[in-house]
Length: 274
Length: 274
Image 1 (tube, one colour):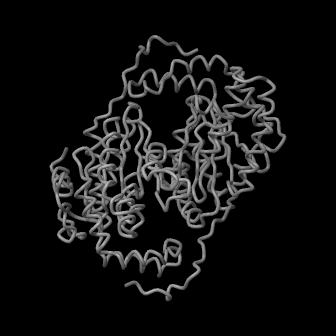
Image 2: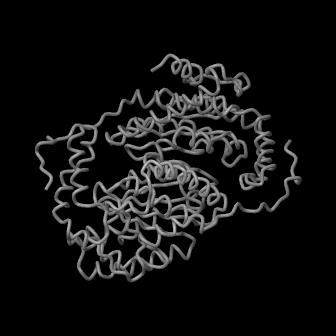
Image 3: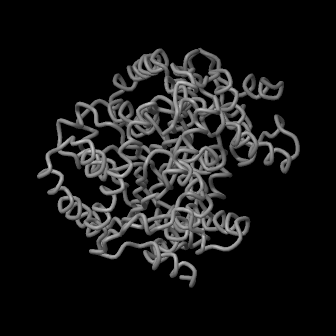
């Protein structure tokens, strides 16, 4: 792993038990990277490397990578997926977006739909929002009792530990944007008719709860960044920084997993193709 | 639609009721395209266009596109997906590979797992193999009675008609390769240690049934190329021809669907972002 990746991980990873103050993490920080154009080019190369590593992961067929993307509206979850994972493509990557639970989903525990969407061995699964909504919006908007929310942190840790012990590596990225940046991005959706469909008047209501959400994120980071499934707080006001940071961490994680092409149980000379 | 795309569709689409003789369709044919390098560059542009069209499809949110890829081992299903759909990426495209049915799947009718995997509105779904295996391998290897197989053609047509009437456009591509080309590609898998994992000794057994498979494909094309869900026979010995043909047809189909960004029910000036 390169020195720069070490610094990125050291700076952005939330240590188990750490109490992150989001106000002290600058969403516009670009100090981990150099020139913008060079960094964009490097990210494109990282995306190609991730594709190559996923190919071995697929060939190996015994482990999976789960990437959780959480962040407020407009924080750039879709953009991250395009930048980091399009080179790998739909053959190796599945994306699940978690929206308001359906009636059927609500008829089960909150992890039921999440478990069903976990990536199969050999693939990369991306959660666009996730079970963490159940300690974020559910907490801020009181969709569950305080006691139920409180229990969920440990439940989630246990669930993720089980996934890890059964061969799924987990990376969790919080896309950290500033309230000002969100304003700009929401305004863009109003100004550009092609983006109107992305604008949901209800998002403005959530914006009124900005501080409560930041508080819920801080509790989530404190309670659920574990040794087995760490959270990273990604400075996300600058898209190129966000993409570069996530691509670096994903690549380093896959390298550490070190997937291997399986050895054949036969010898090439055993076969003559008719 | 451009003239070239018209010719591609006219030449490769199987008309309802048509009896295709696969021996009369040259898998190495490249007469629909010009220079190889120019064609590859044009395919990359088509892939970008498909991404843009899928974005409108997603915004519109009311229809889906289902792309069925069928072909013998090594016919290039994975390669097609990478070439035509990586620009759109995993956010807009989901791939389902259908392998040997599991016990749970076998406990249902053969269309059950297929229906569950159909693309949600706004997205492109790709079937890497499909329900057509149930009239191909199932027929050649006698996995079902003759009567059951015979019934399936009409069942499949009715199932696909229902999908189309409910908003899913269907494109079906048979990747047509020659027996010699398959030999070369299988040999590559034996010769290149990085490709060993792709080689399945059982594939050689299927190769012994080459003519029976070609016959089953011909029946399938005859019985199931319908006005609502046409089959295309794609010359697939040359990868660049295969990719160019499929990208052209997918783009033309999306253009014909003509997805529209929805009109907002509000006016931008209705909102001031706090």
